[in-house]
Structure formats: C-alpha cells, structure tokens
Amino acid sequence: MIQERKAMYVLVDNGRVSVRDVDNLKAFHVEVTGDIADSELDELLRLRNYGYVSGGSAFISVARVRESATDVDGVAAMVDYAQSKGWVDDDGEALQAHIVRRQ
Image (cartoon, rainbow, N blue to C red):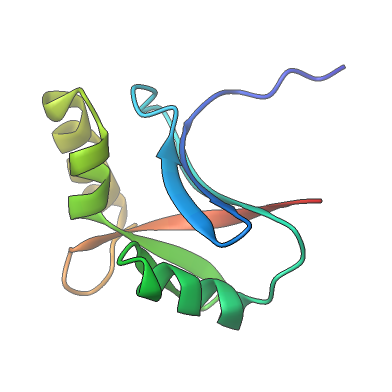
C-alpha cells in the first residue's frame, strides 16, 4: 500500500466545502468526491465563497485559507512561496490548486 503524503486541502463532498489538515502547509490541493464537472465545482466554490475553477485548476481564496489555519506565520510563508512560483491568480487573492478526484 502506498502511503499518501498529507497536505492542507479543500474537501468538496456532497455540496459541502471545507479546509482540512489545516496545520500541514507542505502542499495544497482540492479534493473532490463524486463525479462533478469542473463547471459544477466552479459554481459550488463560488457559491460558498471559497474560490473558482479556471483552466482545469481550482483557485482558492487566500482569506479562506488564512481563516482556517492555526499557524498564521506558516500560512504567510506558504502564500509567499506560492506567489514566488506564480501559483496565484492575477490579483494575488487566490491560491492555485490542482484538483484530485476521488470516487
């Protein structure tokens, strides 16, 4: 069995959206359960004020990430790193995240 590396992630499950593993700032992704199209995911993220989908990636609100995490300095460092790599939207207000689909 391959052990997956833990990371902060946004879970989208049955219409609910939440930030999980908030203290693990080594990686970041959006995990989706069920079979929903990117357009449906985009609508749900926007409706819940978490972000949006564009070009096959999710963009998650930096403010949402900050309010969910307990390590303020760690989140600031994660955001700075993402900005240095270009993993933010044009306004710098959302972090780019790959979408992991689970059945």
